[in-house]
Amino acid sequence: MKPEQPSTDIDRRAFLVGGMGLAVASFLPLSTKAAPADMQAAVKELFGDRPLQEGGVTITIPPIAENGYSVPLTIDVDSPMTPEDYVKKIAVFSPRNPIPNLVQFTLGPRTGLARVSTRIRLAGTQKILVVAEMSDGTLKSAAAETMVTVAACIIG
Image (cartoon, rainbow, N blue to C red; front, side, top):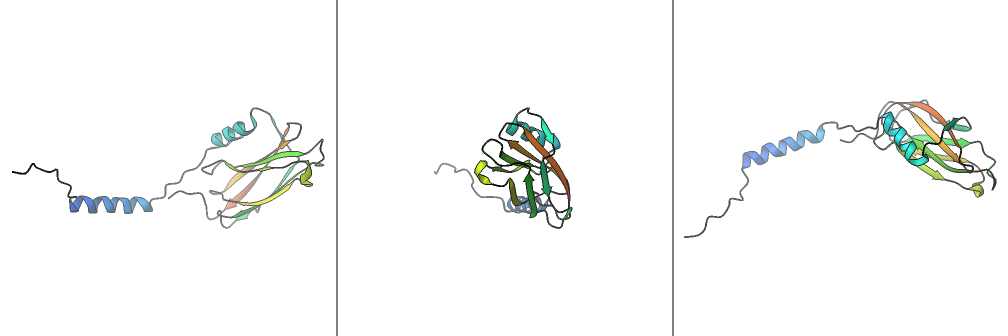
């Protein structure tokens, strides 16, 4: 007499129901987004408790972005870019994206011009925040809003 083997056969009905459940779940929109508090925490993590001074940063972003998957962004910071006075870092933050710290640029006095251009993904209409760290440790900032008609950064 053979010892009884545990059954490894998968019940066909359970398999089909499980497969259907996974198929339906894959079509549900599971949007994940940061809250403004998450953005503030990301700013604090990168720059500490130093105060942000508004001004000295110009943001060029379209007022209406038809597609949130590729939004053009240009940032200019008022700086002579000399060895004594230059922009060390530029960071872009979003209050609605899953990861609030969108991009960071490191610059130095040899950069020549404190200007960067890129494309960013945005999870809907929002006001982005740009922070520029100067060589003396001060932080300049600016914010700009754009309306996004087709949102990006949605997990699903």
